[in-house]
Image (cartoon, rainbow, N blue to C red; front, side, top):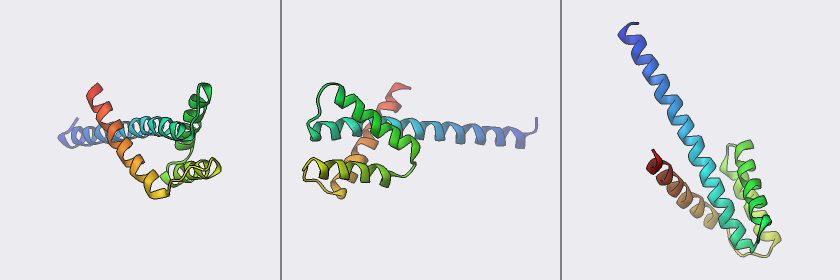
Length: 107
């Protein structure tokens, strides 16, 4: 194996690791986000976990945050919770940082 081959393999491994970490951070963030929304909606018991699962599933099937934000905003509107898209985005950002810190501390 040449030096070039070794560098290429190392780069591919690094890229793969970064993508996997990015996916894990996003999944954890969405789980935290689901709990935050469930609390704002006043959900209890099994309804909390069902809602969290719905948010996580939405995130898995849609790679853009706009889909998640739209779902959350519609859920807030349907339940007369006064919150806007900017507040949701701030919470998404905060929870992304939290999820990232949590995963970095695990390793």
